[in-house]
Image (tube, rainbow over all chains, first blue to last red; front, side, top):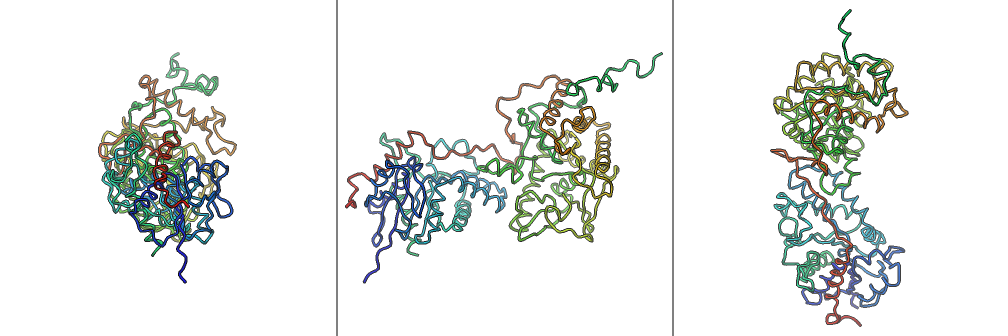
Length: 243
Length: 378
């Protein structure tokens, strides 16, 4: 008798679309995995809450919208139904904290462990969606992974006020140091952090144009990622699951 | 009959200069030696009262400089908790001229930085700024690294400021018996353990205070020959005294000596001045109105009046300052050689809730979950 395949839920806001694209395009081997997607646009996340081990919509409209994009028509997401749950995006945007710490690393400004921890914890505490991941992990059954909102793509003017030469020169090692700190902190909450793959980063703090999408007008979408990016996240995730 | 008092102006007499006046109308307490305008790069250090000075300068668009800025993304609350933005560098309070001299000697390499570190319940504290991090540091190495960052900030502040404001607070201190190094506070109060054999109480006398202050100012001058120094004395009474005297008389002695030292340090010098914030708060003319009920903490209206006097006396002496910029001056006005100092760093934007964004998000999802892809739908 063969064991049941591991059950994996991918829970996300629009950032999870890249995973579905990778799946659709067959860029990743998902055989042996019982996979479900459960997500919707970020604004609908205001109408979600965590209770009794599950993420629940707080109104019927939201429940219907999430169900629409789930193969089984799920209106809520119980941690106990899965072996693994990936939080993809989920309006958990750590870019400000990441870049702040990276800036210090690149300039050689020493930040104590206590300060970095306080910075990150403050950010996480002010991100209610992160508490869902932590609460799901505390439920004990499912292993929880988190891939936060990616860095904006190269050319995004929203980074203009903050970018400086030090950040433009940010190295792989410097980024890895910061990602590792974030991962270590989340591990204390039982959450496995999946950092943005380093080769998708360009210009120090931007997502490379190799991983962007375009909107219906053909304009660059600085926020969302393509199937190639989704495949990379799957690779990270599956490596952790199969480890 | 004429005598030296015959033709003196009204402010030279207590009745016409003080007693007959609304205390808030008393003016001309300070005749500043040099102008301090909004364009000046000003650094502040000293006892706790000095932090009011920096806030007031920033509020008026003056160029108060923060040479050890908080990392981008740190909230105002955390920045405050970790003592960023209080003084121009993260030394915490520097109460005595000796402490200022120590920091400057460490910063400019004249004296080796002590390796002393206090450990308490697995956390590590810097004896020279034990409250700089709310729960101490993770290791002694972190204490040393963090201190090096602060020393670099001190170097920048001294070398790239136009005005250095130092507020003296205390004559009483605690020192290491062996090497004479002075601590920020008595060991064992905030952190560390008091050891009567290793720690000694020092109540600095006038001569020692003046020597230390002059030595500190000599370092400042040697590193920045155009730096002007503005001295003040904190009006905040002692929390406690170890002198054996009553805390009231100990406060009086301490402040009186510091006031005399400030006067002596200024005498005959065009580049060192004294601003009488101490008198504005503590003089009987103000009937204690600027103190909180604990008679120690200075109320915001007291700080406001001090700073209003500062700007008014500057204007009286040098004319009205140019209008301050509509936006506060940058916290760090890009010194010529900013080693650890950094440019202004705006908070990066995070995902917004704009309608346009929702449309883009829906587009991304619909594209991924379009019917042609819904092969898995049962």
